[in-house]
Image (cartoon, rainbow, N blue to C red; front, side):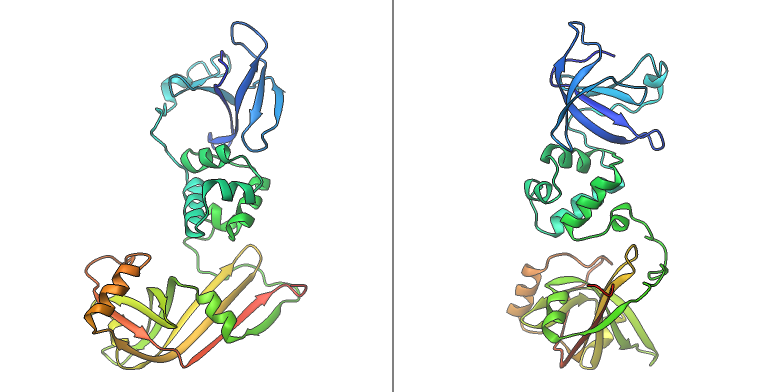
Length: 302
């Protein structure tokens, strides 16, 4: 293994082959670039003396390639994917971290400050396959207002709420102000309607909150369109499977189609996202809540 000042030393997870820790080589002890190296770690910004093991390789800053330790893995060049500079290949954790950071409206620098890590490390984590430590994930989850389970994508395809209940859970009602805060400005909620065949139906929709009204886009022939000119129930919730905690908000009120052309233009312009279901969905439905209630489950000391 040979390196130059400014190269990146990457330590891989033996289980996944993804980056577990990385840092900049800031000091050489041999003129030929062989180990050991002084490394400034991206996650702590500390400099330590490192004798690279078989799970380490060097990312040469000049060439944008990963060079594996030839003594430990002589055949790795034939099997390892070389990542060219400027061609990021984020892993699942990196994608979720980047998505949550943007959702919270945080800059890379601010998110790194909240998570108590170097901005360069956070940028690397978002752009490359990585396997950060549990401590790093806990700090990131706390900084982004989410959970370690969510960053891992755990339970993505499982029904929610299968975790163990708290030993002494606290269930309390939410006042209207708390409910409005949890509804926030947009997200995904569920609307309960009577379908065209008269049977009850519950469907998820992307929604916005505009002037105390809950609005969503749909297609005229969709199940959600049946909400128009009726009284409906609209529900939003959030569960933290890892902590067995969560909340739900229920809004009840009349729904109507937004027909004013200027109002429709304004809603379309202010929309944070297009409907996840795709297709042409230009019919805006507005719900004016006459009742707003909610509940939250927490640990007894919260």
